[in-house]
Length: 143
Ligand code: ZN
Image 1 (spheres, rainbow, N blue to C red):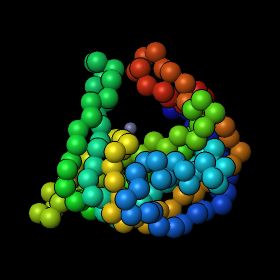
Image 2: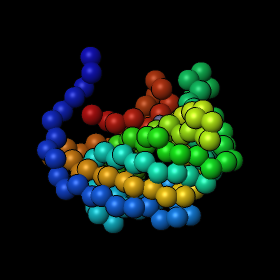
Image 3: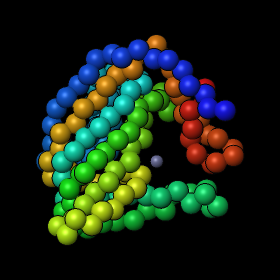
């Protein structure tokens, strides 16, 4: 059965991402500077190139792939929790090229911002910490 808990809405941050920044690092830095321990993130915009991943459930490891062309960010959605005492952003993206073809996956470091508009919503009242999960091999919420 799912484990769900109630959180309260905190501060909402809205802004633009820096051209040339690493998309995942940039959002993580926003969370670190704002002191966000739990929350959610969404963004749209464009990237110069992307590095995404898909989790190999048998091998219990991420398989990374690169998209070396300018792409639109149709949607970035994710959450913020903590791992090893630091905010950790877990985000997935759907990207599209000039033909409207879409690609998607788990956002990895190495995705470079062309332009981005981002909203981060802080959630209060809970502490979600990621710890190694034996079953999946993933750093899941220990709740
Ligand atoms: Zn993921």
